[in-house]
Structures are given as structure tokens and as C-alpha cells.
Image (tube, rainbow, N blue to C red; front, side, top):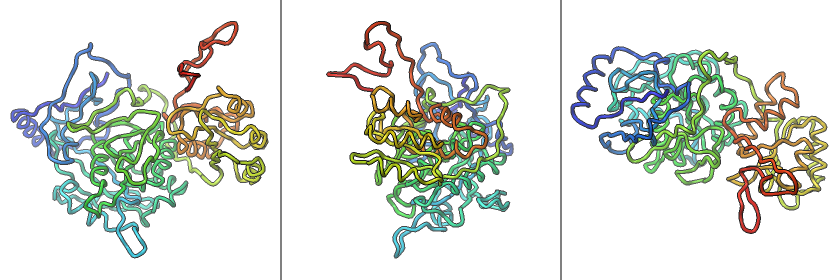
Length: 486
């Protein structure tokens, strides 16, 4: 059963009661186990009754801290923690890896700046209420234990004081250079500090943010106990018109107030699953989308709306926990081959002639199609032990074996990636090939399986006897004029 945060109460009486109780309990610090958690037993409906949370309207972005509300008759997940009636002081490790969000102008163009903490966070009341916070012990990206500065956000109307410890990478990264060593650093950083912080927020460049989010999802889940949120900006926080403050504050609020034990991305007022996102714009403040899966949460004019049906739930209590050791990944053995008109078999043979290539992601036309003339070259690569997965070039939709080319790809041993994004398919391949003990057959099975919420499994097909009929098509197919489409 889901439990709800106590977020009700726009009146003076409620605010006074909350303030007194919070003050009386300010000295008690909640342990990570007391943080709000996703229910382990699924969801329930409240007999069709409707519920609306009320709140005082806060000015600007700080309405994020006003309350958490459900968009339907769902209960906010918690473990009997009433934020309005107990001192709630979540600790967040803010990992500043780099990206546009912390860049400054220079003669060479925008470059990452080490002044992010001192000039973008410390002077801003949104991120610093002026409390003199002690430093906190961290294990940094190089595996070194040291002290790091902390900031305390202003108390929200529920009495929560979020404390952020800031770890800035040295050197900061331009995300266009991020690949598997970066993912390994970030995964180790989260895992080595997991016991000491309630949640993690990672500032990352937008160019490769979708790859990093997906990679961390595969590397840290399913045995992840804390919320990990990645974010960035299309405009630096050193500029007045930056979207960085919105994205960063929203990430901190989401991570500290909702215990969603997976890797997410917060951008443009939406919390998205890390294995489902793709960058859709080079400049828009709504730069990321989750084309084949709904958001986990959104920020409206009245507060945070959690989309419960889209959340993954932790395993039931008592489920054996897998090792928390980080699998070191190597992206140098996987290629992405985008199918285009005029691509020749000779060029495909040349690509797969490298003995270092162990995996490939095919970006095919439409529902998984490509020129038949190229398939023998791919078949030879599979026979040499190269794992290949087929995903669509389209933003929306899924590959299937409905058409002859796609069916011949399946017959050649190429796996269907269904509605995976290219970024998820690539990082999933990198991860699986880095796992020791997986045979090529097991890698192939995992590529078509949903292991981190990255794909929608195929729906069952109707069985019909006799001549072909529409009933033989998968349920996900729809009638159209003049034919059928996915």
C-alpha cells in the first residue's frame, strides 16, 4: 500500500502546527531508511474517490518545495513519514561533473568553470539559506576520501531542510568527451557514497546526458536503494536567462522528497526514466523527451504530480540482493550503424572486419527494415560472435518482424530491440558485453528483454486458424486505410 506525505494545509493553523512540530524535532535527523519509499506491494485505488492537495502558492520556482501531489487517487509513497510533523533533513550529494550548466564564456568559447559553487550556488538564496554548514566526508571520483563543502536549502513549508554536499569533478568535463571511463567514475562515486547520503544529483552536459543516464541505470540497478537524478542546462547558470536553476532545484527536490530507486533525468519540469530519454533539441529548454514511455513525475503550476503507473517498484521484502560491485564497462567494442539509402555490403563488411568489434546497434528504417542486400554481411558478423540488436530510427514506435527484411534479420540472429532508444540500446550492449560469465546466447536474450525499464515487451499475438486474418497480427497493430501500421 502506498502511504502519502502530509502535504495538506494552506491555512495558518496548519502552518503553525507544522512549524512548531518541525522546530521541536529539528535536532532529530532522519536516517536514510526513514525516507519516503516506493511501496513494495504495488498500488491501490481509493474506491474511485478523488483527492486534491491544497497548498499556498509560492513565488517563482520555489513552488517545487510546496508539496507533492498525485494526479489520481494514488497515495504518495512513504514509510509513515509525515514531513509536516517531523524534522526532515535529507542529505543530497550533488556531483558536478561538468556541462553547459557550469560553463563560462572565454576566448575559446564556452568552457567549464570551477567557479560554479562559489558564484552560482553559494550566493543564491534558492540554494543557500546562509546556514554555516560543516564539511562532509565524501569519496571523490578518484576514490580519495576527503571533506567537501555543504549548502543548506531554505526550509520548505513541510519543514524539510535539504542539505547538499557538493563534489566538483577535477577536471570538469565537456560532455562531448564523456564515454565509458566517465560512466565508471560516476557509478563508483554513487556506489561508494551510497550509505552516507539519501539521494544523488548529477550535473552533466546535455550532449551525452542520455547515454550517461542509461549507462548508470544498467550499472547501478536493480540493487539501487537511492534516487539518482541527472540534470543539465541548455544555457549556463552564469547567464541570466539560464534554465539551469530550474533544472537543478527541481532535481534536488525530486531526489530528496521522492524515493524512486532508479536513475532518472529531470529536465524542463519533467522527471524521466534514464533508460528512456533522448535529446530532441539543441536549444529548447524542453530539450529531452521520453518518446515511448510517460514521465515519472511532472511539475505543474500547483506542484509535483507523480505518475504512479509509470514507476518501477522495488522487489518484495526478502528478495536476495545482488552484488553491489560496479561492473566496469568498456564502450570501445560497440558500434552504431545507421542504415541509409545507398549503404553497401562492402562498407558493412569493412566495419565488421575489425576484430575488436563485439557488438553493434542497427538503426533501421521504420519498423525494423533495411536493404536485403546487406543482411548477408550482418549474418557473417553474427556467425563470428558479434552481438547485434535492431532498433528504429524513428522517435516513436517499435521494431518488429512484420516485414520481410526485419524477419530475415531475426533469422540471421539479430535481436529485436523493440522500442528502445538508440542510447539505451548502445549502453545496454556495452554493459552486457562487460559482464563476465554471459555467453553470446545469454547476451542475445538480454538484449530483447526488459531489464531496466528500457523497452516495452511485445504484446501477445492472437492465434487464428485457416487463411491469414487480421487476428494473426500482434495486438499492437491497428487497422488503418489502406493498410496496417504499428
